[in-house]
Amino acid sequence: MTTATDTPTQTGQKPPMTQVEAAHTVIETITQMAQEQKPLMLRVVPEDGATFWTHYPEKDARDKYCKSRWYYHVHAAGSRDADEHGHFHLFLHRTQLPQGLEPKVWPPQREDARAHVTHIIGLSIDTNGVPRSWFTVNRFVTNEFLYPADVMIEHLPQFNVDHTQEDDLVNRFVTAMVALYRDEIAELLRERDKRQEELVAEFGEDAYSKESGVEVLSQIAIDLDAKLGSLELG
Image (cartoon, rainbow, N blue to C red; front, side):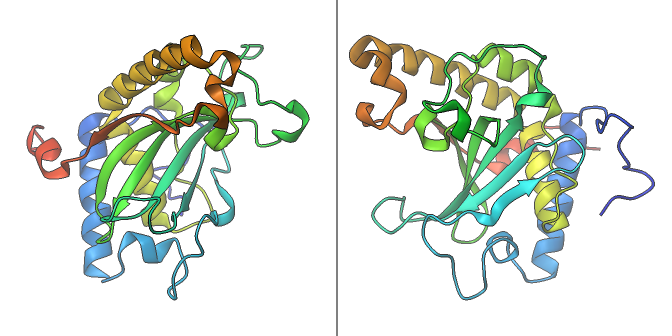
């Protein structure tokens, strides 16, 4: 819900959240979820459980101002780590990038890629609703318009999903997590590009497709307590 203190400008953009602001928002949203005894995943998927591979919400959560988006889904047992419940996929919309900027790789069928998104990062959540890892994926996983890491890194501050129609605490938590971990996400995007170069050398154009057999390109574990403890929050 938009309030008088957080209403975006006419362009739909607020000043980028600082790391300390992000840390406070992460603490606030997690604390409120705990107080309400409703963990993150139950704010996203049905209470009787998720259908494997289904997007929640069905047509993704889309910020009404800047068009950043997220969706959450759950992989079937055997195709996810034992302690993972599910994960978020987080995107910028192509209109958040400079007009006319050509992607590094286009979706195979351009007319079918109607979402016009570029994937930032995946955020894995454990069975208690706690963030467990960040990861990047190969282009075919999300059918994205793929842009180089330096482009994505420059525009990370534009990611904002505070104003989707989904649960307000989830929206704010996701926005804040990206701001809190901007440096780590930048490094993962650089590692993603290096891994993609290796795949191109091995598979050629198939490097970005299922033919490569590689879905996850880079990944790091999340220790939220350590991250928050490293900051001077005041």
